[in-house]
Image 1 (tube, rainbow, N blue to C red):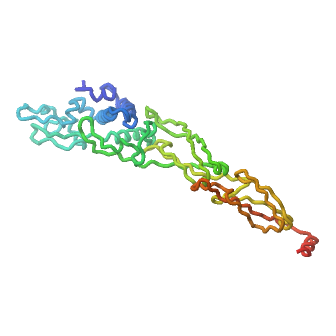
Image 2 (image 1 turned 60 degrees about the vertical axis):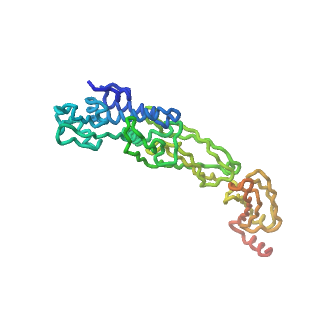
Image 3 (image 1 turned 180 degrees about the vertical axis):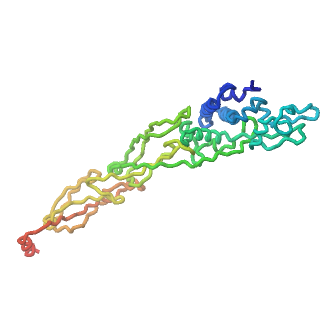
Length: 369
């Protein structure tokens, strides 16, 4: 029969619970009471620490055995330190370590949990003092070591949002936690930086010209309230501003897969879809008119529509030089950094020469030219 059941009650398990049952109970309680999921509940932080400290003792067979035999106060104080009038050492006949300290207790503190040693005389022993681990550190490592693929069970799953901008990715990971039993945490959580995932985002010239909001559905891997890995869908609204160029990066923070360190960031990299009529060069749009040799020499006329829908009537009566061009200011792409301004609409002329000429044609050309 155990001396007390306080730690078992904090995890809502019986004193006969298996290690697996204790671990599952801790995960459920830790996810329920995590401070970042309960920002408006001042009691949550204390309950989160209590369940973490209960798990730290009960998940270790030696610590659990000592707790079952002697209780929590014995662990926290390192055992009683008898005064001269307190009578004989209550553990003098318990066997085990020198000074009458039980084997389980000696093993518990010799593993580095405390910082003292029994006095050699055997009539008393010093207070060892036990410092609990940082609840956040214990929380992360318990989920990572649980065969969940190294995922971080904090971000988004604790939804209510989490402060970002630090490698730990969690406000709780940056706090100087103190144990609910009055002990300062000495171990600080060490987590890697959040990774960034890049995805291409093909965009048409028309959308880059007018601007548009594109809805993109992504799949991401998350942890539910029980710690199980699941796949969920998320719809993002991606703003395409007028004049946006290929290679532009549009970032969404904390929307990707959960991983060690936090929620992945997602970056869309804009790609320009090929257009059948126009070619973009910076803020300018280029349109090419194909002319045969006869037209180039004797004159021609064309109607050309810009990307903004304006029709240009272009006519040349004389010879048109191959590779020459005309520029029409303000009819090109919007300038993203200068609202209201546009680049040029450039019309280039490509002269198609005949693949071959008959001797008669050559003679005629010699006579004309």
